[in-house]
Picture 1 (cartoon, rainbow, N blue to C red):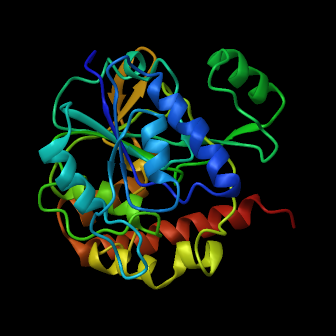
Picture 2: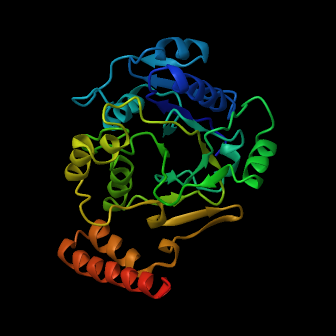
Length: 301
């Protein structure tokens, strides 16, 4: 998979801490391939100017929610019609991409699938320099404990072919449930999901939530987050990257196993593959009970 990607993003305002981290992110995106295409969506302060600095296309007007948050389905439709490359990546504008991204995912066949993975969180004091050696910086931060895996819910990038999201309902970017909804869409349509966590180090720069009135709570549990979850039917066992069909390691693909959690794998398969909601709910109760019992056993008396 040597073809360059089209990178899609809807940045926050280029103000304060967000200006610094988003500039570093865009610089890292430019380094993944000489022919990479960048498309920035939205009309937040500074986005137009950042697009000009980094040779990106700027789409100031895109479908958005009542709060002004962009809609993923609108971005996907635009990219389907206008993007230069067949393979796209949508990611948050605080994410640093490794320069060898394409080489690392080359073992995934060029088929209709979704590639995502866990992000690695950088500590608040980290000042990443995209012009310096990526691996040396990452190794140093890992050894010092300032680069830590987020966990299976930390999905901040999505690689997919043109047209994959045809039929996706309205989905608000940057609100709770948005990443789960993308995986649920694929699972329901038998589109393979690949977990690239073991093979790809995707770095997330620390930031606060001052860009959203109500902060972190509004992002994760506010009205628009609830709307995402209701619209995409995520009330039970919203899928995360551990539910992927395949796992990409440095030596190739292997079948996913929900990281050894068989009951969880069954819940997800019943609900999202086969739409057996009542049966999946029964198994989900059993799964929750088993985890509660295991936690009690592990806890000290």
